[in-house]
Length: 328
Image (cartoon, rainbow, N blue to C red; front, side, top):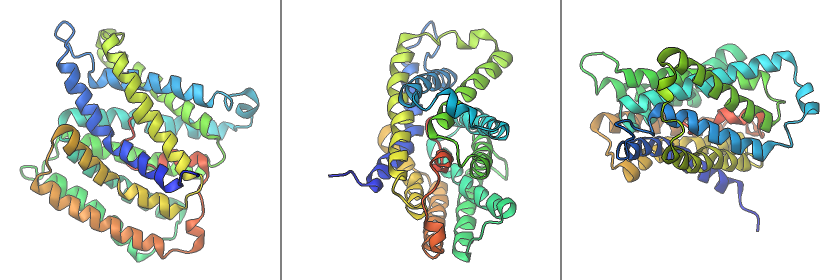
């Protein structure tokens, strides 16, 4: 009996939804096992070592795709696009999300991150002349307003916290990355896409941290305690989630993928509750309700689109169709 594609999408959504809470929990675990007064599982260390572990696993999985023949087929324009996507989606966005996790509640990270789909939709309409119906537009507006209210109702006056701002910029970076992928990278093999993005993102993050903070910032990067947890984290959250996602994509339509994405904030909030015991506050309930309304309206709009909109997507651009934090 073949495992249904929707089940793979559901598993991936649950894994990605739990990523924020798991990251925060690992940071707390590190604080309970200090090394000379330092947290070995700092957000900086966990991002760098987690990416390294994920890169190793991805190379083992996709090593057959990483051959000279396939690499030669990629044009210089594709390499440029791949590099930009890697910088935005593989380095900038994860670094900002990890910063946001250090400064604000996980539920805020989940809900504010939902501005990514409306931004991507607006960019698609503006730059790609994508055709959308009124239901999709209404859903995007409702989701954006929900994310905005989540922030504004928790702030004094109209100030924006550093954590919330970091998540908002990360969502913008991911949206731009997704648009570039759709335009330029539809023919790139999945293995090359995944490994290159992870490699460039890891190297750029490492170099930037060295420049800003010096080599002592990675003083605990070889801690066995850090590596044992990052290996598990990377295998389950990063690689396991992505593999389940792409297994589901093989026989799924755009509407099915969109529906799976829609459950991401619910999975994220449930993950924060069950893993961290974090209960949503009133502002998060109000903003989350609007976001859910936007999701429902968006699904109605997608269901009413033409058959063309329900076709299967090129595998290579699927990496940037997962909404929200994916552990990388």
